[in-house]
Image (cartoon, rainbow, N blue to C red; front, side, top):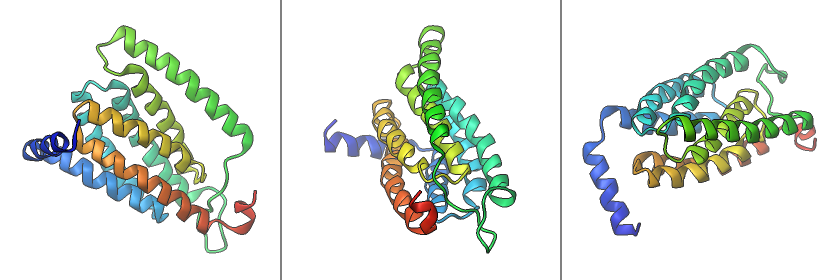
Length: 208
């Protein structure tokens, strides 16, 4: 797709964009910006984004992404609770950013690979899903990244970088340009988030 075709597609989508797409675009950007700033309002805004995205992805027959956004609803509620009441805290009672323990990294990585293969096979053979394995890969990685965000592990941003790169291409391919644009912006925001969280980590945590 050349630039002229892309702009034309974006213009057509803008004319037909319903209020759900607009809410999804704006709430999605806002919740990531709030996460970068370590603001707990990222979770209620994320809940709104997830509910809207369930409808959008279901209409696009991206069933793994539909399942992912149902999971986002649950994990935003969990993250909201965890940031308020649990986790390692500083003297001013703020939840600290930490590195994910190495044994958890290996476990989560294995679960992502296994989950991608199983979910991709099921959607590919049992449903009319499109891009079943790519969709499943971004879904399982997002499962992990969202949980890591809720626990405030800095590595969540590395996983989001990979997810956002794949999802940007996938959504443009599926002719969902506003979500493609959204995830393209997410790609830059994930790098920004990693740098911001790294800067705000305690010296002990950063050197771990």
